[in-house]
Length: 179
Image: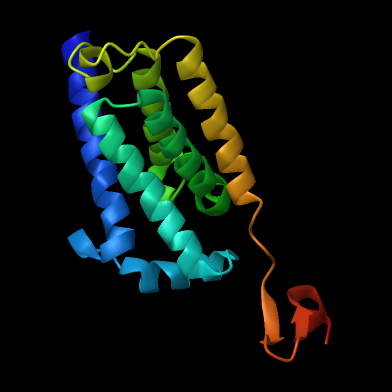
């Protein structure tokens, strides 16, 4: 079981480091803060760059902590929050399956991060090597914090606004469509 947790931590943590650095630095074919910020704006997150940085830090930071097995419940909370937000903001309307841009993949990653936390990261985790016992109740708290964080983040989206932000001349999308 410890070897399985190690493999999961290294693979999932490493992938999240990559996803986060795509958003933050444009590495691994990513779009960096500028491009990701534009995407975040299109989803209703304003300002988009700030949300891109937060998502990138959540992924890269949570991934690094998970990879190391350090503060594993915090790592799980960050990953769960970002993935649940992605599910609610992008994937849920497409159904479950990944081939339809559904929520299958981010759900599996979020659940895996939670399971790793519940397994206390395994004996090769830095938490274990430093004598930190962060499984059990703390793992459940990390999972709960991640779920709450993901729901809160998804609810930070604002409806599309059309108009000049400097003058305050704006209409909501429904008003524009009625005109």
